[in-house]
Length: 322
Ligand SMILES: [Zn+2]
Image 1: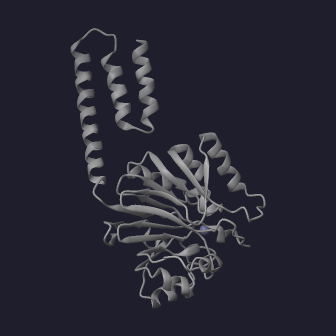
Image 2 (image 1 turned 120 degrees about the vertical axis):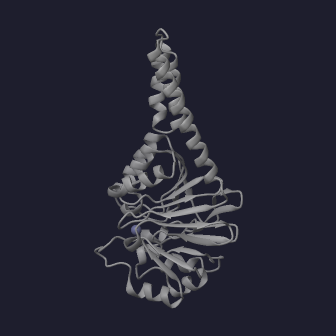
């Protein structure tokens, strides 16, 4: 009987993270019930066995379909904020920003819909509410292997409620934060890398937004650039780097002070994604930014118009999933 209770408890524990392990535990618990083998018990056991088989088959099919050489980048609709999920071809996952606290359920649901229980790399581009406000909820609901934040020792931080909440959540979950700066390869796998282009180690900016991690994710011949809320000052510091990319997450929700002409010319994307809320109070994206993108012949995708946006790369080309 104790064994049955123990297995049922293990089943409940696993149910949050691993469906198959949970079912094996529940099934073993039912199987080991110290009751006489009546026809009723045999029926329960048979149903449990069939259910278990079906669920394992479903997970297997999913894993086969996710191992298809594709990198999937999902720009999650989090209203006025940023949150991007990257599923690498080898199954590793990266979440760049988690929107505001109000939208953490949208982020969590997107992860769950994609059968994600573990986030290998959780990245907070910079400590503003519309990027890290949702982090504590994500950290408590998922297994996070690594948390990555920007080097910003040159910045004198005023009280930051959201950064404090995040620090507490990381501490409670026992996750150590890794501080990244220019030149760090924060993640890599078969045919793909994620490299930090900004900020530099001793960077001094007046605006916290400029400390945003700028990350270039390369898979085969394709590349995606994630810019957080970095503005001109940060963009102009990295003009010597290879900025070319297929997809640019347009800086600072399409604010006038980001995505300057020179940066846009260097990045030369075919698609620009703007993560922005409907009818936001700052009237973003800015008309001049839209004009700059249009003049360069860049296809503009906006979360306020399209909702969540999914773009896939097979290593040779990128494709918008519609
Ligand atoms: Zn922002």
